[in-house]
Amino acid sequence: MKFELPKLPYEMNALEPNISAKTLEFHYGKHHQAYITKLNNLIPGTKFENASLETMIMEAEGSIFNNAAQVWNHTFYFSGLKLDKSSEPQKQVDSAIKSSFGSYTEFKDAFTKAAATLFGSGWVWLVKNAEGKLEIIQESNAGNPLREGLKPILTCDVWEHAYYLDYQNKRPDYLNAFWNLIDWDVVEKRFL
Ligand code: FE2
Image (cartoon, rainbow, N blue to C red; front, side, top):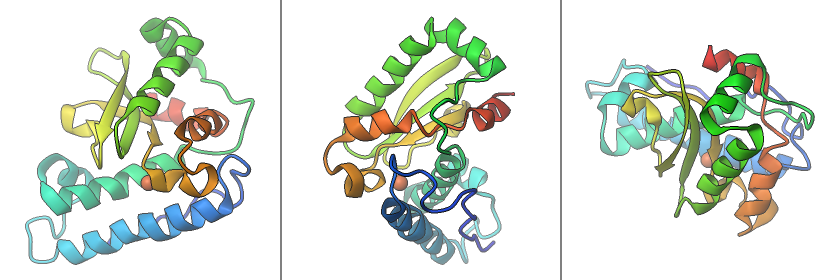
């Protein structure tokens, strides 16, 4: 199966000033594309030649896992963003956040802390577990919680390539901006 770069659901400048068009041109246009190109070059002649990204995330190791997961993770990340400062968790996610973390503020603090303290490159995830509760998970490199049987509903990319052009080494400033960009309608749909 040949994978293609999915279209962004918004224009390149739609997330400014929180994430610039220049960052998206590199992060989406170069990095996301590069994972797709590498994956398309890796899978011919392997048992994953016609596999879905999810199958490769669950079963592959090494380069195929890394590139398949990075393709999935980036599509998931970009499709969960839009510029809407007033957006807040919707019905079901709002009550799940309150029952899992106490309050939106406590959730926000815990998620921000997980993203700020993740050493090196990786992803922070908000996931729904088998009991329907929400958890915050740190994953290094291309890590994806599907492998642990968890259902991702939101992610923040904390690889430096996600923020370096806009914020240089200041990951906390990027995380601060990230809260203006969450499309809670999408998160709600993923939760249900
Ligand atoms: Fe990234």
